[in-house]
Image 1 (cartoon, one colour):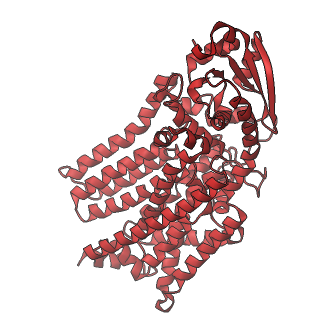
Image 2 (cartoon, rainbow, N blue to C red):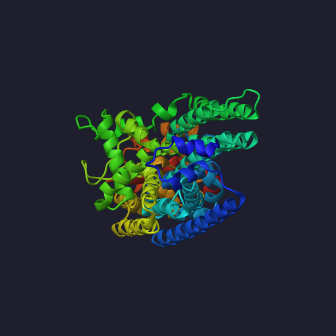
Length: 565
Protein backbone atom coordinates (compact mmCIF):
# COMPACT_ATOMS: atom_id res chain seq x y z
CA UNK A 1 0.00 0.00 0.00
CA UNK A 2 1.37 3.46 -0.92
CA UNK A 3 2.03 6.15 1.66
CA UNK A 4 -0.73 8.33 0.24
CA UNK A 5 -3.25 5.48 0.28
CA UNK A 6 -2.35 4.65 3.85
CA UNK A 7 -2.87 8.23 4.89
CA UNK A 8 -6.25 8.36 3.19
CA UNK A 9 -7.42 5.43 5.28
CA UNK A 10 -6.47 7.20 8.53
CA UNK A 11 -8.02 10.61 7.79
CA UNK A 12 -11.58 11.23 9.01
CA UNK A 13 -14.24 11.36 6.34
CA UNK A 14 -15.15 14.92 7.33
CA UNK A 15 -12.00 16.23 5.64
CA UNK A 16 -12.54 16.90 1.93
CA UNK A 17 -10.51 14.73 -0.42
CA UNK A 18 -9.04 17.80 -2.16
CA UNK A 19 -7.58 19.09 1.12
CA UNK A 20 -6.22 15.65 1.98
CA UNK A 21 -4.39 15.33 -1.32
CA UNK A 22 -2.97 18.82 -0.95
CA UNK A 23 -1.82 18.09 2.60
CA UNK A 24 0.01 14.86 1.77
CA UNK A 25 1.33 15.21 -1.76
CA UNK A 26 4.65 16.64 -2.90
CA UNK A 27 4.36 18.93 -5.94
CA UNK A 28 5.47 17.58 -9.30
CA UNK A 29 7.90 19.64 -11.45
CA UNK A 30 5.11 21.22 -13.49
CA UNK A 31 3.20 22.05 -10.34
CA UNK A 32 6.31 23.54 -8.73
CA UNK A 33 6.66 25.84 -11.71
CA UNK A 34 3.03 26.88 -11.41
CA UNK A 35 3.39 27.49 -7.68
CA UNK A 36 6.46 29.65 -8.30
CA UNK A 37 4.46 31.69 -10.80
CA UNK A 38 1.61 32.11 -8.31
CA UNK A 39 3.99 33.29 -5.62
CA UNK A 40 5.49 35.77 -8.08
CA UNK A 41 2.04 37.22 -8.72
CA UNK A 42 1.46 37.49 -4.96
CA UNK A 43 4.83 39.19 -4.55
CA UNK A 44 4.03 41.79 -7.23
CA UNK A 45 0.58 42.46 -5.79
CA UNK A 46 2.04 42.93 -2.31
CA UNK A 47 4.65 45.34 -3.64
CA UNK A 48 1.96 47.42 -5.34
CA UNK A 49 -0.16 47.47 -2.16
CA UNK A 50 2.64 48.58 0.15
CA UNK A 51 3.91 51.18 -2.35
CA UNK A 52 0.43 52.67 -2.56
CA UNK A 53 0.26 52.78 1.23
CA UNK A 54 3.67 54.49 1.39
CA UNK A 55 2.64 57.17 -1.08
CA UNK A 56 -0.53 57.93 0.87
CA UNK A 57 0.91 57.95 4.38
CA UNK A 58 4.08 59.80 3.39
CA UNK A 59 2.11 62.53 1.63
CA UNK A 60 0.02 63.06 4.75
CA UNK A 61 3.00 62.99 7.12
CA UNK A 62 1.87 59.89 9.02
CA UNK A 63 5.10 57.88 9.04
CA UNK A 64 6.21 59.12 12.47
CA UNK A 65 2.93 59.12 14.39
CA UNK A 66 4.14 56.34 16.68
CA UNK A 67 6.62 57.42 19.31
CA UNK A 68 8.12 53.93 19.10
CA UNK A 69 8.82 54.43 15.39
CA UNK A 70 10.72 57.62 16.22
CA UNK A 71 12.61 55.76 18.95
CA UNK A 72 13.57 52.87 16.65
CA UNK A 73 15.02 55.32 14.13
CA UNK A 74 16.81 57.13 16.95
CA UNK A 75 18.49 53.95 18.19
CA UNK A 76 19.60 53.00 14.68
CA UNK A 77 20.92 56.51 14.06
CA UNK A 78 22.93 56.80 17.27
CA UNK A 79 24.94 53.64 16.47
CA UNK A 80 27.01 55.80 14.11
CA UNK A 81 25.84 59.33 15.00
CA UNK A 82 26.79 59.99 18.62
CA UNK A 83 29.72 61.17 20.70
CA UNK A 84 30.67 57.53 21.31
CA UNK A 85 29.32 55.56 18.35
CA UNK A 86 29.25 51.78 18.40
CA UNK A 87 27.04 48.79 19.04
CA UNK A 88 26.64 49.70 22.70
CA UNK A 89 24.26 52.37 21.44
CA UNK A 90 21.77 49.62 20.56
CA UNK A 91 20.61 49.78 24.17
CA UNK A 92 19.36 46.99 26.41
CA UNK A 93 15.59 46.66 26.14
CA UNK A 94 14.60 46.59 22.49
CA UNK A 95 16.23 43.77 20.57
CA UNK A 96 18.84 44.75 17.95
CA UNK A 97 17.82 43.28 14.59
CA UNK A 98 15.22 45.93 13.59
CA UNK A 99 17.73 48.68 14.35
CA UNK A 100 20.54 46.97 12.45
CA UNK A 101 18.26 46.72 9.41
CA UNK A 102 17.48 50.43 9.69
CA UNK A 103 21.11 51.62 9.81
CA UNK A 104 21.72 51.69 6.01
CA UNK A 105 18.64 53.85 5.49
CA UNK A 106 18.74 56.14 8.53
CA UNK A 107 22.18 57.45 7.57
CA UNK A 108 20.49 59.79 5.11
CA UNK A 109 19.48 62.82 7.17
CA UNK A 110 16.33 63.58 5.13
CA UNK A 111 15.10 60.00 5.48
CA UNK A 112 15.65 60.13 9.22
CA UNK A 113 13.74 63.41 9.48
CA UNK A 114 10.71 62.37 7.43
CA UNK A 115 10.57 58.72 8.53
CA UNK A 116 11.23 57.22 5.10
CA UNK A 117 14.19 55.33 6.56
CA UNK A 118 11.79 53.05 8.39
CA UNK A 119 9.77 52.14 5.30
CA UNK A 120 12.22 49.94 3.38
CA UNK A 121 12.70 47.11 5.95
CA UNK A 122 9.00 47.08 6.84
CA UNK A 123 7.86 47.04 3.22
CA UNK A 124 10.19 44.14 2.43
CA UNK A 125 8.90 42.30 5.52
CA UNK A 126 5.31 42.88 4.45
CA UNK A 127 5.98 41.40 1.01
CA UNK A 128 7.78 38.40 2.54
CA UNK A 129 4.87 37.87 4.90
CA UNK A 130 2.33 37.90 2.08
CA UNK A 131 4.33 35.40 0.02
CA UNK A 132 4.82 33.23 3.12
CA UNK A 133 1.11 33.17 3.98
CA UNK A 134 0.26 32.14 0.43
CA UNK A 135 2.93 29.46 0.38
CA UNK A 136 1.78 28.12 3.75
CA UNK A 137 -1.86 27.99 2.68
CA UNK A 138 -1.02 26.28 -0.62
CA UNK A 139 0.28 23.30 1.32
CA UNK A 140 -3.30 22.37 2.18
CA UNK A 141 -5.65 24.04 -0.25
CA UNK A 142 -6.19 25.07 -3.85
CA UNK A 143 -5.04 28.43 -5.18
CA UNK A 144 -8.53 29.92 -5.10
CA UNK A 145 -8.71 29.27 -1.34
CA UNK A 146 -5.11 30.30 -0.63
CA UNK A 147 -6.03 33.67 -2.14
CA UNK A 148 -8.49 34.10 0.74
CA UNK A 149 -5.68 33.77 3.27
CA UNK A 150 -3.27 36.14 1.55
CA UNK A 151 -6.03 38.68 0.84
CA UNK A 152 -7.14 38.77 4.46
CA UNK A 153 -3.55 39.19 5.63
CA UNK A 154 -2.21 41.50 2.94
CA UNK A 155 -5.22 43.82 2.68
CA UNK A 156 -5.41 44.48 6.41
CA UNK A 157 -5.25 48.30 6.62
CA UNK A 158 -3.37 48.27 9.94
CA UNK A 159 -0.64 46.03 8.54
CA UNK A 160 -0.44 48.17 5.39
CA UNK A 161 0.08 51.23 7.56
CA UNK A 162 2.76 49.52 9.63
CA UNK A 163 4.50 48.41 6.43
CA UNK A 164 5.40 52.07 5.86
CA UNK A 165 6.78 52.76 9.35
CA UNK A 166 9.75 51.78 11.51
CA UNK A 167 7.58 49.54 13.71
CA UNK A 168 8.71 45.93 14.19
CA UNK A 169 5.39 44.13 13.61
CA UNK A 170 5.77 43.47 9.85
CA UNK A 171 9.23 41.96 10.38
CA UNK A 172 8.16 39.69 13.22
CA UNK A 173 5.01 38.53 11.42
CA UNK A 174 7.12 37.56 8.41
CA UNK A 175 9.45 35.59 10.70
CA UNK A 176 6.50 33.81 12.34
CA UNK A 177 5.02 32.86 9.00
CA UNK A 178 8.24 31.66 7.41
CA UNK A 179 9.15 29.61 10.47
CA UNK A 180 5.85 27.73 9.96
CA UNK A 181 6.51 27.36 6.22
CA UNK A 182 9.97 25.92 6.80
CA UNK A 183 8.72 23.56 9.51
CA UNK A 184 6.12 22.14 7.12
CA UNK A 185 8.71 21.76 4.35
CA UNK A 186 11.12 20.18 6.80
CA UNK A 187 8.53 17.63 7.86
CA UNK A 188 7.82 16.77 4.24
CA UNK A 189 11.53 16.34 3.48
CA UNK A 190 11.90 13.99 6.45
CA UNK A 191 8.91 11.93 5.31
CA UNK A 192 10.45 11.65 1.84
CA UNK A 193 13.84 10.68 3.36
CA UNK A 194 15.46 13.61 1.58
CA UNK A 195 18.21 14.07 4.17
CA UNK A 196 20.19 16.72 2.35
CA UNK A 197 17.12 18.87 1.76
CA UNK A 198 15.90 18.32 5.33
CA UNK A 199 19.23 19.46 6.75
CA UNK A 200 19.26 22.54 4.55
CA UNK A 201 15.70 23.46 5.52
CA UNK A 202 16.51 23.03 9.21
CA UNK A 203 19.41 25.48 8.95
CA UNK A 204 17.18 27.96 7.11
CA UNK A 205 14.67 27.56 9.93
CA UNK A 206 17.44 28.21 12.45
CA UNK A 207 18.33 31.48 10.72
CA UNK A 208 14.69 32.61 10.76
CA UNK A 209 14.30 31.73 14.43
CA UNK A 210 17.52 33.54 15.36
CA UNK A 211 16.15 36.58 13.53
CA UNK A 212 12.90 36.26 15.49
CA UNK A 213 14.84 36.03 18.78
CA UNK A 214 16.61 39.28 17.92
CA UNK A 215 13.41 41.02 16.80
CA UNK A 216 10.92 40.64 19.66
CA UNK A 217 10.83 38.77 22.96
CA UNK A 218 7.82 36.86 21.62
CA UNK A 219 10.39 35.30 19.32
CA UNK A 220 12.14 33.63 22.26
CA UNK A 221 9.05 31.57 23.04
CA UNK A 222 8.25 31.09 19.38
CA UNK A 223 11.76 29.79 18.71
CA UNK A 224 11.59 27.39 21.66
CA UNK A 225 8.27 25.89 20.51
CA UNK A 226 9.43 25.71 16.88
CA UNK A 227 12.60 23.92 18.03
CA UNK A 228 10.44 21.44 19.94
CA UNK A 229 8.28 20.77 16.87
CA UNK A 230 11.35 20.30 14.67
CA UNK A 231 12.79 17.88 17.22
CA UNK A 232 9.55 15.87 17.35
CA UNK A 233 9.54 15.64 13.56
CA UNK A 234 13.16 14.50 13.55
CA UNK A 235 12.65 11.79 16.19
CA UNK A 236 9.98 10.24 14.02
CA UNK A 237 12.75 9.57 11.49
CA UNK A 238 15.71 9.24 13.88
CA UNK A 239 19.02 7.94 12.54
CA UNK A 240 22.27 8.86 14.30
CA UNK A 241 24.29 8.21 11.15
CA UNK A 242 22.16 10.46 8.98
CA UNK A 243 23.39 13.93 8.03
CA UNK A 244 20.12 15.48 9.21
CA UNK A 245 21.14 14.65 12.79
CA UNK A 246 24.21 16.85 12.46
CA UNK A 247 22.06 19.64 11.02
CA UNK A 248 19.76 19.33 14.03
CA UNK A 249 22.71 19.73 16.41
CA UNK A 250 23.81 22.91 14.64
CA UNK A 251 20.20 24.13 14.55
CA UNK A 252 19.89 23.54 18.30
CA UNK A 253 23.11 25.43 18.95
CA UNK A 254 21.89 28.39 16.89
CA UNK A 255 18.54 28.62 18.67
CA UNK A 256 20.11 28.23 22.12
CA UNK A 257 22.96 30.67 21.51
CA UNK A 258 20.82 33.57 20.29
CA UNK A 259 19.19 34.54 23.63
CA UNK A 260 22.34 33.63 25.56
CA UNK A 261 24.35 36.13 23.51
CA UNK A 262 21.81 38.88 24.21
CA UNK A 263 21.97 38.13 27.94
CA UNK A 264 25.77 38.22 27.76
CA UNK A 265 25.63 41.55 25.90
CA UNK A 266 23.47 43.02 28.67
CA UNK A 267 25.85 41.70 31.31
CA UNK A 268 28.90 43.22 29.64
CA UNK A 269 27.45 46.56 28.60
CA UNK A 270 25.04 47.30 31.45
CA UNK A 271 26.42 45.11 34.27
CA UNK A 272 23.14 43.21 34.58
CA UNK A 273 22.42 40.17 32.38
CA UNK A 274 18.68 40.83 32.73
CA UNK A 275 18.72 44.60 32.36
CA UNK A 276 16.10 44.26 29.63
CA UNK A 277 13.74 42.69 32.21
CA UNK A 278 14.41 44.77 35.31
CA UNK A 279 16.43 47.80 34.20
CA UNK A 280 15.24 51.43 34.24
CA UNK A 281 13.79 51.19 30.72
CA UNK A 282 12.11 47.78 31.09
CA UNK A 283 8.34 47.30 30.86
CA UNK A 284 8.20 46.62 34.60
CA UNK A 285 10.02 49.86 35.44
CA UNK A 286 7.88 51.91 33.06
CA UNK A 287 4.70 50.46 34.56
CA UNK A 288 5.95 51.27 38.07
CA UNK A 289 6.70 54.87 37.08
CA UNK A 290 3.43 55.50 35.28
CA UNK A 291 1.05 53.81 37.76
CA UNK A 292 -0.15 56.26 40.39
CA UNK A 293 -0.28 55.11 43.98
CA UNK A 294 -3.75 53.93 44.92
CA UNK A 295 -5.02 53.79 41.34
CA UNK A 296 -6.56 50.53 40.03
CA UNK A 297 -4.36 48.20 38.04
CA UNK A 298 -4.81 47.89 34.30
CA UNK A 299 -7.32 45.29 33.06
CA UNK A 300 -5.92 41.78 33.04
CA UNK A 301 -3.42 42.42 35.84
CA UNK A 302 -2.79 39.02 37.48
CA UNK A 303 -5.79 37.57 35.63
CA UNK A 304 -5.00 35.29 32.69
CA UNK A 305 -8.62 35.01 31.42
CA UNK A 306 -9.15 38.77 31.36
CA UNK A 307 -5.71 39.33 29.83
CA UNK A 308 -6.43 36.80 27.08
CA UNK A 309 -9.81 38.41 26.45
CA UNK A 310 -8.30 41.89 26.03
CA UNK A 311 -5.60 40.62 23.70
CA UNK A 312 -8.06 38.68 21.58
CA UNK A 313 -10.44 41.64 21.43
CA UNK A 314 -7.60 43.90 20.26
CA UNK A 315 -6.81 41.31 17.57
CA UNK A 316 -10.45 41.20 16.47
CA UNK A 317 -10.83 44.98 16.31
CA UNK A 318 -7.71 45.24 14.18
CA UNK A 319 -8.69 42.39 11.86
CA UNK A 320 -12.38 42.80 11.04
CA UNK A 321 -15.21 45.28 10.99
CA UNK A 322 -17.07 45.15 14.35
CA UNK A 323 -20.17 43.51 12.87
CA UNK A 324 -18.03 40.61 11.58
CA UNK A 325 -16.24 39.70 14.81
CA UNK A 326 -18.45 36.68 15.62
CA UNK A 327 -18.14 35.41 12.06
CA UNK A 328 -14.35 35.65 12.33
CA UNK A 329 -14.37 33.63 15.56
CA UNK A 330 -16.57 30.92 14.07
CA UNK A 331 -14.46 30.61 10.92
CA UNK A 332 -11.07 30.54 12.65
CA UNK A 333 -12.14 28.21 15.46
CA UNK A 334 -13.73 25.87 12.91
CA UNK A 335 -10.53 25.94 10.86
CA UNK A 336 -8.48 25.10 13.96
CA UNK A 337 -10.67 22.08 14.74
CA UNK A 338 -10.45 20.94 11.12
CA UNK A 339 -6.67 21.01 11.44
CA UNK A 340 -6.88 18.80 14.53
CA UNK A 341 -8.90 16.24 12.55
CA UNK A 342 -6.50 16.13 9.63
CA UNK A 343 -3.41 13.97 9.35
CA UNK A 344 -0.03 14.91 7.97
CA UNK A 345 1.79 18.12 8.90
CA UNK A 346 -1.23 20.42 9.01
CA UNK A 347 -1.04 20.57 12.82
CA UNK A 348 2.15 22.63 12.54
CA UNK A 349 0.00 25.60 11.53
CA UNK A 350 -1.37 25.71 15.10
CA UNK A 351 1.94 27.36 15.99
CA UNK A 352 0.35 30.56 14.67
CA UNK A 353 -1.87 30.66 17.78
CA UNK A 354 1.14 31.00 20.09
CA UNK A 355 0.84 34.81 20.50
CA UNK A 356 -2.45 34.30 22.37
CA UNK A 357 -1.01 32.51 25.44
CA UNK A 358 2.19 34.56 25.26
CA UNK A 359 0.40 37.91 25.48
CA UNK A 360 -2.14 36.63 27.98
CA UNK A 361 0.77 35.86 30.31
CA UNK A 362 2.62 39.09 29.43
CA UNK A 363 -0.43 41.22 30.24
CA UNK A 364 -1.22 39.34 33.44
CA UNK A 365 2.29 39.08 34.86
CA UNK A 366 4.68 40.99 32.61
CA UNK A 367 3.51 44.61 33.07
CA UNK A 368 2.37 44.84 29.43
CA UNK A 369 -1.12 46.42 29.42
CA UNK A 370 -3.43 46.66 26.41
CA UNK A 371 -6.10 49.36 26.29
CA UNK A 372 -8.86 49.26 23.68
CA UNK A 373 -11.49 51.95 23.01
CA UNK A 374 -14.53 49.70 23.51
CA UNK A 375 -13.64 48.44 27.02
CA UNK A 376 -12.35 50.11 30.16
CA UNK A 377 -10.31 52.32 30.33
CA UNK A 378 -11.66 53.24 26.85
CA UNK A 379 -8.39 54.41 25.36
CA UNK A 380 -5.58 53.22 23.11
CA UNK A 381 -2.39 51.51 24.22
CA UNK A 382 -0.46 48.60 22.71
CA UNK A 383 -3.36 47.64 20.43
CA UNK A 384 -0.76 46.67 17.81
CA UNK A 385 0.07 43.50 19.75
CA UNK A 386 -3.21 42.03 18.56
CA UNK A 387 -1.87 42.14 15.02
CA UNK A 388 0.15 39.00 15.76
CA UNK A 389 -2.99 36.90 15.35
CA UNK A 390 -3.47 38.05 11.75
CA UNK A 391 -1.65 35.00 10.30
CA UNK A 392 -3.77 32.63 12.41
CA UNK A 393 -6.99 34.35 11.37
CA UNK A 394 -5.97 34.28 7.71
CA UNK A 395 -4.87 30.64 7.55
CA UNK A 396 -7.61 29.02 9.64
CA UNK A 397 -10.38 31.06 8.06
CA UNK A 398 -9.13 29.96 4.63
CA UNK A 399 -9.03 26.33 5.79
CA UNK A 400 -12.69 26.59 6.77
CA UNK A 401 -13.66 28.05 3.40
CA UNK A 402 -11.61 25.36 1.68
CA UNK A 403 -13.51 22.71 3.62
CA UNK A 404 -16.85 24.32 2.74
CA UNK A 405 -15.93 24.50 -0.94
CA UNK A 406 -15.14 20.79 -0.93
CA UNK A 407 -18.37 19.69 0.71
CA UNK A 408 -20.52 20.12 -2.39
CA UNK A 409 -18.88 20.12 -5.82
CA UNK A 410 -21.67 22.24 -7.32
CA UNK A 411 -20.77 25.20 -5.08
CA UNK A 412 -16.98 24.75 -5.14
CA UNK A 413 -16.45 27.57 -7.61
CA UNK A 414 -18.64 30.00 -5.64
CA UNK A 415 -17.40 29.77 -2.05
CA UNK A 416 -13.84 31.10 -2.58
CA UNK A 417 -15.06 33.97 -4.73
CA UNK A 418 -17.66 34.99 -2.16
CA UNK A 419 -15.05 34.73 0.59
CA UNK A 420 -12.61 37.00 -1.26
CA UNK A 421 -15.37 39.57 -1.83
CA UNK A 422 -16.14 39.49 1.90
CA UNK A 423 -12.45 39.99 2.70
CA UNK A 424 -12.19 42.97 0.34
CA UNK A 425 -15.38 44.49 1.76
CA UNK A 426 -14.07 44.02 5.29
CA UNK A 427 -10.77 45.72 4.44
CA UNK A 428 -12.61 48.62 2.78
CA UNK A 429 -14.81 49.05 5.86
CA UNK A 430 -11.78 49.02 8.17
CA UNK A 431 -9.99 51.52 5.97
CA UNK A 432 -13.00 53.83 5.89
CA UNK A 433 -13.34 53.69 9.68
CA UNK A 434 -9.53 54.00 10.02
CA UNK A 435 -7.49 51.03 11.32
CA UNK A 436 -7.28 50.49 15.07
CA UNK A 437 -3.49 50.88 15.17
CA UNK A 438 -3.72 54.06 13.09
CA UNK A 439 -6.33 55.48 15.47
CA UNK A 440 -3.97 54.72 18.36
CA UNK A 441 -1.14 56.51 16.58
CA UNK A 442 -3.31 59.58 16.01
CA UNK A 443 -4.72 59.61 19.53
CA UNK A 444 -1.38 59.21 21.29
CA UNK A 445 0.85 61.04 18.83
CA UNK A 446 -1.04 64.26 18.21
CA UNK A 447 0.06 66.18 21.31
CA UNK A 448 3.58 64.71 21.25
CA UNK A 449 4.18 65.73 17.65
CA UNK A 450 2.80 69.23 18.24
CA UNK A 451 5.08 69.68 21.24
CA UNK A 452 8.15 68.36 19.43
CA UNK A 453 7.45 70.52 16.39
CA UNK A 454 7.31 73.65 18.55
CA UNK A 455 10.49 72.66 20.36
CA UNK A 456 12.22 71.83 17.06
CA UNK A 457 11.54 75.37 15.86
CA UNK A 458 13.38 76.74 18.87
CA UNK A 459 16.24 74.25 18.54
CA UNK A 460 16.74 75.11 14.88
CA UNK A 461 17.54 78.68 15.92
CA UNK A 462 20.47 77.59 18.11
CA UNK A 463 24.03 77.88 16.73
CA UNK A 464 24.57 74.72 14.66
CA UNK A 465 28.06 73.89 15.95
CA UNK A 466 27.37 74.20 19.66
CA UNK A 467 26.48 71.00 21.59
CA UNK A 468 23.26 70.55 23.52
CA UNK A 469 22.70 68.72 26.79
CA UNK A 470 19.37 66.89 26.44
CA UNK A 471 17.63 63.70 27.51
CA UNK A 472 16.74 62.16 24.15
CA UNK A 473 14.77 59.01 25.01
CA UNK A 474 11.49 60.90 25.45
CA UNK A 475 11.45 63.62 22.78
CA UNK A 476 14.23 62.92 20.30
CA UNK A 477 11.65 63.81 17.64
CA UNK A 478 12.45 67.48 18.28
CA UNK A 479 16.09 66.93 17.29
CA UNK A 480 14.93 64.79 14.39
CA UNK A 481 12.63 67.50 13.02
CA UNK A 482 15.27 70.18 13.52
CA UNK A 483 17.86 68.10 11.67
CA UNK A 484 20.36 68.26 14.53
CA UNK A 485 22.86 65.36 14.46
CA UNK A 486 22.92 63.27 17.62
CA UNK A 487 26.69 63.72 17.91
CA UNK A 488 25.94 67.38 18.68
CA UNK A 489 24.21 66.34 21.88
CA UNK A 490 25.30 65.11 25.28
CA UNK A 491 22.67 62.50 26.11
CA UNK A 492 21.99 59.39 28.14
CA UNK A 493 23.44 57.16 25.42
CA UNK A 494 26.96 58.06 26.62
CA UNK A 495 26.79 56.90 30.22
CA UNK A 496 30.00 58.30 31.76
CA UNK A 497 29.77 61.67 30.02
CA UNK A 498 26.08 61.83 30.91
CA UNK A 499 26.66 61.29 34.62
CA UNK A 500 29.36 63.96 34.63
CA UNK A 501 27.03 66.35 32.79
CA UNK A 502 24.21 65.86 35.29
CA UNK A 503 26.57 66.72 38.13
CA UNK A 504 27.26 70.16 36.54
CA UNK A 505 24.85 70.97 33.68
CA UNK A 506 26.29 74.43 33.01
CA UNK A 507 29.76 73.01 32.35
CA UNK A 508 28.49 70.16 30.17
CA UNK A 509 27.33 72.09 27.10
CA UNK A 510 26.60 75.64 25.93
CA UNK A 511 22.88 74.83 25.63
CA UNK A 512 20.80 72.82 28.06
CA UNK A 513 17.30 71.50 27.34
CA UNK A 514 15.22 70.44 30.34
CA UNK A 515 11.79 68.86 29.92
CA UNK A 516 9.54 68.51 32.94
CA UNK A 517 10.25 65.32 34.83
CA UNK A 518 13.39 64.25 32.97
CA UNK A 519 16.91 63.79 34.34
CA UNK A 520 18.16 67.15 33.06
CA UNK A 521 15.32 69.02 34.77
CA UNK A 522 16.19 67.28 38.04
CA UNK A 523 19.89 68.07 37.56
CA UNK A 524 19.13 71.77 37.04
CA UNK A 525 16.93 71.77 40.14
CA UNK A 526 19.92 70.54 42.13
CA UNK A 527 22.61 72.57 40.29
CA UNK A 528 21.00 75.76 38.91
CA UNK A 529 24.13 77.90 38.88
CA UNK A 530 25.47 79.60 35.72
CA UNK A 531 22.38 78.94 33.59
CA UNK A 532 20.16 81.58 31.97
CA UNK A 533 16.61 80.60 31.01
CA UNK A 534 15.96 81.73 27.44
CA UNK A 535 12.59 80.21 26.46
CA UNK A 536 9.82 77.88 27.58
CA UNK A 537 7.79 75.65 25.25
CA UNK A 538 4.79 73.79 26.64
CA UNK A 539 2.51 71.15 25.17
CA UNK A 540 -0.79 69.67 26.26
CA UNK A 541 -0.06 66.56 28.29
CA UNK A 542 3.68 66.84 27.50
CA UNK A 543 4.86 69.29 30.14
CA UNK A 544 7.22 72.14 29.30
CA UNK A 545 10.66 72.29 27.73
CA UNK A 546 13.03 74.97 28.96
CA UNK A 547 16.06 76.10 26.99
CA UNK A 548 18.97 77.37 29.07
CA UNK A 549 22.15 79.11 27.98
CA UNK A 550 25.28 78.22 29.91
CA UNK A 551 27.40 81.17 31.02
CA UNK A 552 30.60 79.31 31.77
CA UNK A 553 30.57 77.03 28.72
CA UNK A 554 30.36 79.98 26.34
CA UNK A 555 32.98 81.92 28.22
CA UNK A 556 35.49 79.04 28.37
CA UNK A 557 35.58 78.07 24.67
CA UNK A 558 34.80 79.70 21.32
CA UNK A 559 31.79 78.20 19.56
CA UNK A 560 33.80 76.85 16.62
CA UNK A 561 36.20 74.98 18.91
CA UNK A 562 33.69 73.70 21.43
CA UNK A 563 33.73 70.00 22.18
CA UNK A 564 32.48 68.39 25.39
CA UNK A 565 35.24 67.23 27.72
